[in-house]
Image 1 (cartoon, helix red, strand yellow):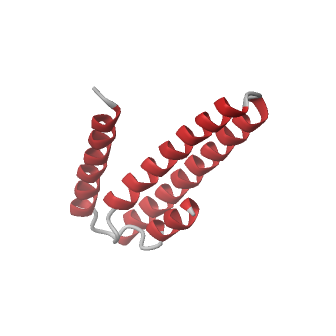
Image 2 (cartoon, helix red, strand yellow):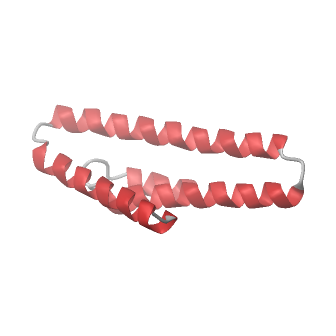
Length: 105
C-alpha cells in the first residue's frame, strides 16, 4: 500500500469516527470532555513534532540529510493537521481548526 493510500485511509477513518461521534453525542458534558481530550491530544502531538524537529536539528550533522529529514517531518505534520481540520466536526470544537491553521503558519 502506498503512502497516499495510507493517508487517504487514515483521513477516511477519522471522518467515519467524527460522524459517529457527532451522531452519538447528546449531552454537553460528553462534548466538553471530548473537546478537552482533542485539545490535549493536539497539544501532545504538536509537542512531539517540535521535539522531533529539535532532535533532528541537534543530532544530524549533514546539512543535506538534515534538511531532507526536516522536510519529511514537516510534510507529516501538515498531513496530520490537514486530516484533522478536514474531518473533525466543527460542533466539537469551533476553535480547533483555527488553532491548527495557526500552528501550521
